[in-house]
Image 1 (cartoon, rainbow, N blue to C red):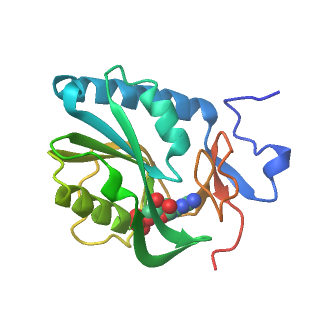
Image 2 (cartoon, rainbow, N blue to C red):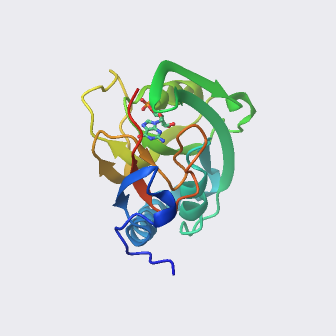
Length: 192
Ligand code: 5GP
C-alpha cells in the first residue's frame, strides 16, 4: 500500500535513496499553500499572467501547482540544463526561450531546485531581454549552500528549504532516473 505520510524509503528505491526528505503528504500540503498565495498575489494581473515551467525538473511540481491556482493563466515550457549526474557543469544551457510569448506579460517562472542560482540568473536575464513586464520565481526547493552566485534574483515563492545534499524525486533526477518518485529523497550515490 502507498503511504503518503511515510518517511521509510520504499523497498524498490533503497539502493538509490538514502532517506526521505519530503513526504508525499507534506509536498501536497505545501503545494496547496503556494497555490493559494500565488492566486492571491496574481489576482489583479490575471489577464496577463504567464507561467513558465523549466524542463525537465519542474514538470511534476508545475502540474500540481497550476491545478491549485484559481486564476486564468497560460503555461509555457522552456529548457535549462546545467547538471550532469550529481554535478554542475558550471554552464547553463537555455533552450526554447525565444518561442515564449512573454512580451508585456507577468511571468512566474517555476523551477525544481535553486542551488547556486546560476540558472535563475540566466533565465531572468533572458526573460527581461524578451520584454516580460515582470518576472518572479517559484521554486519547489531552495538549497542551503555557500556556493551562491552573485546578483541572483530574489525567489518570491519557495516550497521547501533543504540541506546541501543531492536530492531526487518529484521531478528531480539523477541522469534522468528517479524523477517519478512521489517523495523527495537524499540520493545515495557518491558525489563525484
Ligand atoms: P543552479 O544553477 O541553481 O546551481 O542549479 C539549478 C539546477 O541544477 C536545477 O534546476 C537542477 O537541474 C540542478 N540541481 C541542483 N541541485 C540539484 C539536486 O540536489 N538534485 C537534482 N536532481 N538536481 C539539482
